[in-house]
Length: 125
Length: 292
Image (cartoon, each protein chain N blue to C red):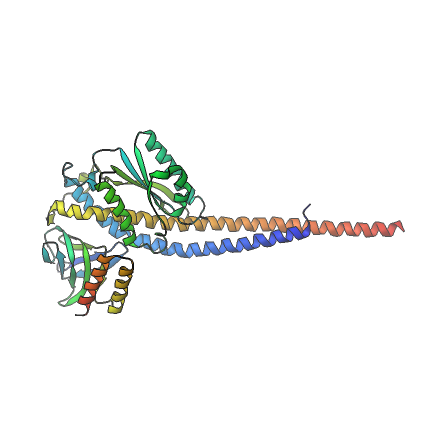
């Protein structure tokens, strides 16, 4: 449960709930630019660009998740991100990303391939 | 009277059939668990998406709302998406879908509407290919199973979106087997376009603080609706996959049991016949001995 100090963050893909955690702050790549979500944020629904969602749990980055567009639904006590394609940059190795990129290329999905390519570049940092 | 050798062969063949059906049942049961987990894991996404659409849909003015939400305002051309299985041996699963699809097409046509059909899964496609012919605009195979790729489903949705864009359809419905439990599946017809919005939603959801939309209400809706279509189809196909496995499990369980009954009956007959042969032989010997 979210307390006064945290926002209940969830990242949901069509296949599963990828991450659910109470966060101090979440930074989301909105269509109009990055925006941070703190507790008691004004209720907002925003479309997302391809970019990184950063989740801060206690002062440091807890997770960096690359999303390929999507929507964020923010209320005062929670923040839900819906994304069709998402990769957890911390727990996915570059070998796995490389394999996913190859798969996407083999399937002729240039969009997905570009997404995994970008993830690969970011996960190296 | 069947002779002993025939009976023996018969029993052997039924036994091997029973082995196959019982193995198929086990496989279906194991896969069903995974398919059910998949279907459940997909629910949060669909639920959140649905809630957002409801929220936005009520505010959108009917005149300016995108066609994906409110349709074209007409109801002449209907696209029916039929989800069946790629494989048979699953009881009434495909039969139910095929029957309902046929009835639905007839009902729509007799109401003076033009119907197009899109097939997902080989079985319904095979069964209806001849009678529907030209009306089938697309058919897909091999998208179902224990791992359903969202990208694959998206390409199905893309076809529908394209048809809508070029103004070739007014309404889109999907026909699939909804998973209720391992023993019940229900043939379900649900409307994809226009999106069904509950009439009395305002009383249900007390208006909380109004949302801000970035970049704008309209843009969010434009972005959300295509995703929603894909999600709905994805959910339906996951449900259908789980239903298929459940139906197969039940069917194979019945088949195994029937084979067992048949084996019992044949064994009984076999023993009787054998006994009768022995008795006849004995009588022959005895009467032969007495005649001397």
